[in-house]
Length: 350
Image 1 (tube, rainbow, N blue to C red):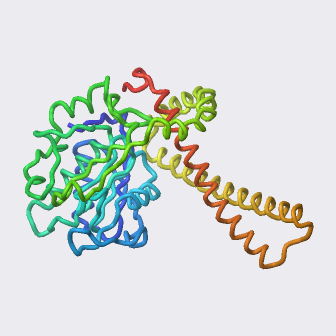
Image 2 (image 1 turned 180 degrees about the horizontal axis):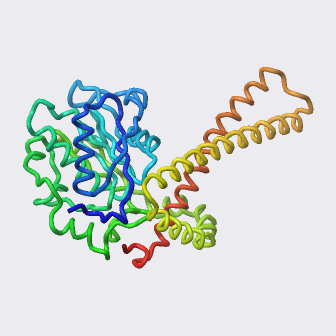
Image 3 (image 1 turned 90 degrees about the vertical axis):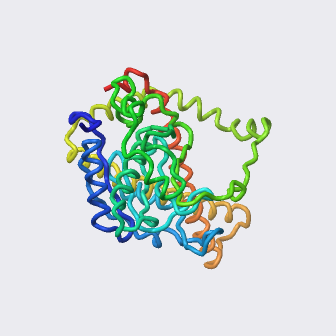
């Protein structure tokens, strides 16, 4: 029996990066439909080498792609609530090479790599099924890693073949119990620590712990100096919390619409978002150029030459581009924070 009832299911896109076999795509589709009751639509993403350049592994001679840019490309091609990316390219993340799959707990995009899978082997489709199961579970907020469950960590192919093919009783209960089941707009189980960056990856081979490097903690003083400028933003966020609750209610209503209607809405939102930030980029670049010209005339009392004007244009374009990226990050962070903070147990129930 599918986990999601017909009246409450997230939409999911399967995004292919590069050449992906028909068996891989059909297996992913069948897994999503059979386990979650979701009929996924395929989207074609860019080839991995158009997203980023592969880098040589420090442990082997293989050229592998960093997972972060690939996940961004999957998100850009996605027009649904969630996205499962498929690629035949080898991927790596945070010092781990040859990943089977990668997904952020409570995120919206995950990737499954068949780089280490041999399509001639009988276990080929089963391995894909397990990874689609697992990465969907991660996106839906399941953060546990334990035996007897498809979420069990697998460090090599033999371990992956030994893991269970489905969710354990506990994890399935978290996905189906009305008190914890994933609900819009976040589509995560209510007890998931989705505010933290929590990637979970399966790798083909274990690496030395020292290879990943070490991470140093900031001192209390450094944290204070870094977070102090965020205080005014916090006051603004508090003032906008009613807006976030409105967005949450709208998203809950939108989830009851037919999938085709929701895809149209999502596509319109993506188009509107693109042109909004494009207009912001142009506006910031023009304002920067105007400020440069005004400052030059005020300080030197004369008009700049052609070479200087072209230099100013280059600077204005750069500042306009990075300025819109900063605004986009601030808006996304405020939106996510407000939206997650506005979720009460009542609004998270089915």
